[in-house]
Image (tube, rainbow, N blue to C red; front, top):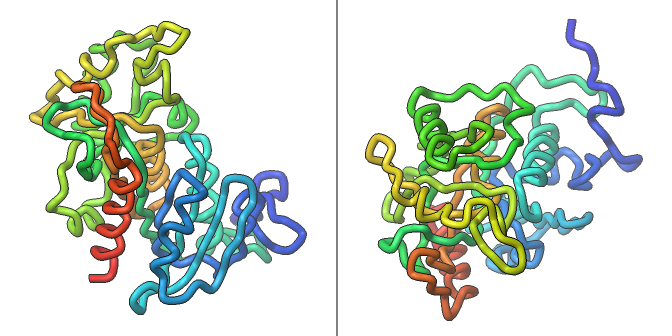
Length: 287
C-alpha cells in the first residue's frame, strides 16, 4: 500500500498551489520553456497569441498561453542546479501527484522541458553568437550525490575521464539529453555541456580569488571521450537532464553562446543572440 506524501515533504500553500512555484494543477502546459532570468519570460511570452496566466513568486515567474494553436508555458528558475531540482520536482508533482489525496497518480504524464539559456564556449570552433544544443550534460555539482541516478557505460566513461583530468575529489555525473526533442534541432551545433556549481571559480575565472582549477576550460576542451567533445560551460543543463531521467520527462538544453573562453571574445550583442535562440525554439516548437 502506498502512503500519502506527508505535508512536510510536499509543501502545498493554503490556496492549493505548490510551495515554490505558486502554481496549481492545470495551470501549466505539458511543454515548458525554462529560462534562468525572470525577465526573459516576458521576452518569450510576448510572442504568444494569448496569455491565460501570469504568476510570480521569488525568482519563479510563470506565463502560460497559446502559441500558434499550441498551449505552452514559460517558467524562470533562477541560476544553478539547486533551483532546477526545486523546479523539476514541483513541476512533476503538478502533473503526477493528486493534491487531494497526496498520492502519486496511477498514470504517469511525461513532460517536455526545454531550457533556453546563455553559455560560454570552450572551443574555438564554437564562436560567440552561435547556438548550441547539449548532447549531454556533465555535472560538476553535487546534486546527484543525493539521488540514485542510473547512467550508461558511456556516461560513466565521460564522468571518469573528467574526474581523472581535473583530479577531482568526487565523481561528476553525465546524462544524455532527450533524443526526441533534439531531433527538432539537428541543424544546430552540439556537444557536451559542462554544468558548474558557480560562475567564477568553478569556471576558472579570477577576480580577486584564485580558482583551484585556473585552466579548467583548456583541460576539459582537450578531452575527447569516444569522439565526443566538451563544448561549453553553464550552470543548469546537467541538473535538467538528470532530474528529467529520474522523473521520466523529456529534457533538452539549448544554449545561446555569448562568450568564447578560448579566444576570450564576448558577443557585442548578447541580447540579439538570445532573441535568435528564442525565435528558433518557437519556430521548431510550432512545426
